[in-house]
Length: 613
Image (cartoon, rainbow, N blue to C red; front, side, top):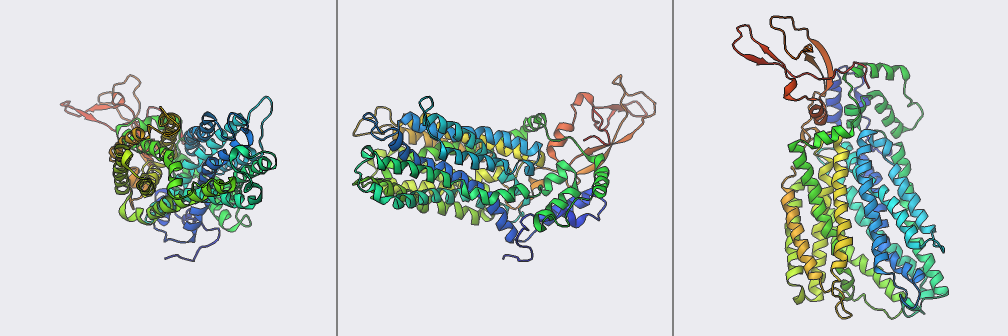
């Protein structure tokens, strides 16, 4: 049931400030994180999902709108005797792949920067990139020295960097703010905004086509659209593309003013006072919520003895090179890679589905464009949207791993039917299998591959792990569009434009099976604390003893051992793995009888200065 105690700007709960009177930092951390993990479902969770999900709405809109916009671009810029208003295949593919290619870099770069600089510092930057490049696309044109394809590719690659950055940041921020009981559903709701973005792209296209009906209905085909018709279509594609940036403006303010997540503040920044003030500022405004320099300096001084350096690239590489973590990362990244190969490849058959549903009428240009948009709306509502939202409501009950494995298994069967029985399938069969595939993609691995990497890695390297996994997924999307799209047209004729589509579907069946196998490497994270999943200690800050260092490498027999306290942070599993030393640097002290050698505790090769940052 929704709780109404905190509404409005209370999306991010001010839990550090509640426990500022507690002296023990470990106790303060435990109580604050427990407050976050056990918070009842309320409007702050709804607002959290909306603010973080707007980015995915915009991402999906931009990615999906271009599929409809390229038809209009072909009419405007390829209206000649050779092309007759149809964009060449190479140009079409390049424009569509550009965003996915840029997203790979954005996911990896923003993922690492989210750990290095903080979630708050990077959040909103990627949305500004998306908004600005979306507007730039709608205003661009071509000249005698630069084609429209080159301009669009440039802006869509840059936009892709912003789109990619939204994946790890939104997922990790949502995971670190959400309650344990509802975490999976809230993250899934963020991802489900993709479905609404796809639907919005088709609806806006349909509305724009209806608005300009009078200019289109008198034109028979795309090859006949010249003069006033071409001018109208040029306005249409610009309006469709530009609309994708509007929702981002409403979320940009909230993203730029949100506080840092509680877990990052505790485990990386160690500035509890600043985080508490930021949270209150977000909820209640600036008035009366300013950092007290004296209190902040005192808190920083008290926490300095525990502080470790910011996460580095070498720390992330060393952490993910451990066998246990490498297996986890392989499972999350490769299952996402295999998923996107088929997820993006399934669109190859969407054109033939339009005729199955009766949306292939081409009596005039108006009917052609209207039916294209309407057909996409029907397909999205029939399969994708129900799958997205069923995941939202069941992922915290059924679990991530069962949904992902079952989804891959069912998709393996569907693609086997499509591949090995293609010749015997009617268009009705094809429609049913397409809708089922869309449903089990989204009530299956398409949602869970996004959720799990945000939960199973430690705070210090969580965003990096998610970004790498998402980047592998987008790499699969690029492969699907670059290699498999041309493959289905191998040996094409006028009567059979996709002669090799059955072979591609067989390959996708293999990918789905491999995705199912790699899913077994990923742990179940249903209703488990993030620290438990990442093997992080509850006692994050601890003073550990260290022996004096004998420069000769041998402990003196009978000598005095001078011990002193060295402050280390044990809150993050990644910090522990990087901070540990090899066995060659362990001390061995002989016992009093000289019968054997007693192993002593490990010590840091480089001592941490009490005030090191």
